[in-house]
Length: 232
Image (cartoon, rainbow, N blue to C red; front, side, top):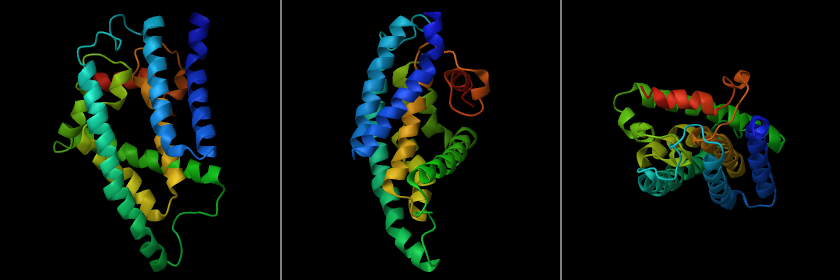
């Protein structure tokens, strides 16, 4: 079991990424953002029984479980949908005017798709870092992000526990600027997929050794548990 644990995180990341690549290539990008997280959630829920990080801290028996599910559906689900409808679509509509004003699309649409995705991941992650840091430091923003940290256990349901206003703010700060620059929808969805690859397993109550040199590069369970232990 110890040897299997060492390969669990890279196998999980590669398998989840592969599932998204296949779905995007087949033209099912948007459905995959609902289906893959569901499958991932069930898988991690099972793993919490097999190789728990902390005994008794899994999803099963968590008194906050139904509350987590409610916030996932209403807060994150509805909040993201509204944010995309208002900010992202609005920014996309303005993109044409920006393009005409500056004599061309600000987004490098002539780049290969993989290069556009890499650029989107770098820019979006930078914007999301700013958004996240602001929510931890600004007293007027912290209350909407505090819900994500108001947990007694770390398990897979905590990944999607979020306030609707938090999701609206994320769409405004992260996705709207990229849409305004002219980034294609599929490229924007690729960032949402990347969040799904690293987010759920970072919150799950599963023992997954990760090389320490990755701590400063990607979201890892070890570092994220510390982040949740120190909310402010």
